[in-house]
Image (cartoon, rainbow, N blue to C red; front, side, top):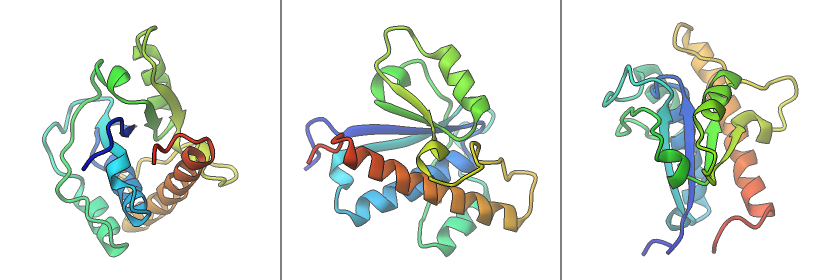
Length: 165
C-alpha cells in the first residue's frame, strides 16, 4: 500500500535519456534498499521534448545495469508546467537546467528546485556533465557523480525529516 502523501522527487536533464533517467533509477534503488519505495513518487523529465517516449540511451542502460540498476523500462518525457505543482523536489542535473526550471516555475508553485550535486559532498563539481557525445568512461563517471548526489539527497531528506514513515 502506498503512503497517503508520498514524497515526490523529479530529476531533470535536457532530453531525459542519459542523466535524469539514471538519477531516477539510482535514487529508486537507494529508496528500495531502505524499504521506503512506498514513501516516494520518483520520476524524471527533460527540459526539451526531443526524445519523448524513447528509452534511455543504451550506454546509460548498460552503465546502470553493470551496477545492478535497471532503467531500461523508463521513457523520456518533457518537463510540464504541472510538474511544479505535482513534485515537491525538482532536481536539476546542471546549472542550465536549474536556470530553465527557475524561469519556468510558476510563482505559486510549492516545489523546491536544486542541483543534484549540491547534495553530493563532491568538491569542485556543480554540474553532472552530459555524457551523450562522450565515451563509455564518461558514462561511468556520470553514474558515479549521480550516485553520490542521490545518496546525499536521500540523506538530506532523512535528516530534514522530509521522509514520511
